[in-house]
Amino acid sequence: MRIVLRYFFRTLRILLAPFMIVAEKLSTPKSVERSPEAQAEVDKACEKLALYQFRTCPFCIKVRKQIARLGLNIEVRDSQLDPQHKQDLLEGGGKVKVPCLQIQQNDGSVKWLYESDDINAYLQERFG
Image 1 (tube, one colour):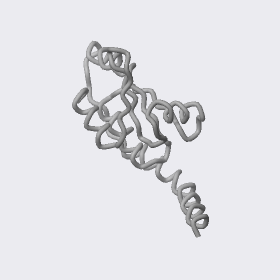
Image 2 (cartoon, one colour):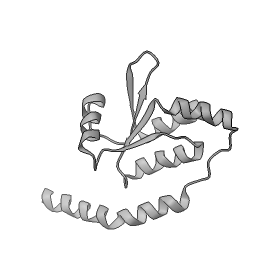
Image 3 (tube, helix red, strand yellow):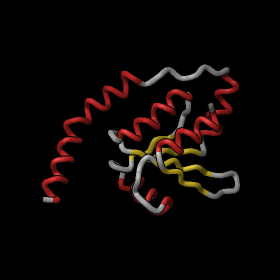
Image 4 (cartoon, one colour):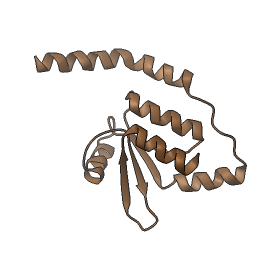
């Protein structure tokens, strides 16, 4: 029974994936306007951030919309398609769960932030 449910939901995800991607493209908000100097500062701060995600995960879509809304250039790493990113997420964060924001601190340490609401709140607080 468990296998049947697993394959049912995998098939459902495969069928819904194109619709989710199109819906994301159509509903992504415009980014905030900044001066070139201010955007350069934001881009520099974003160099220390990386988002581990799956392309069709609804929670990842939510975070990517926040990134677009704030006009951030954060590296996006697909943990579903790239085994190296999946391994990095497991070793660094301790679990393969997305979305996850990797934050490199100024002292060289790395913080792993899970949960879409927490990530969005962090991004809003820092860049909003």
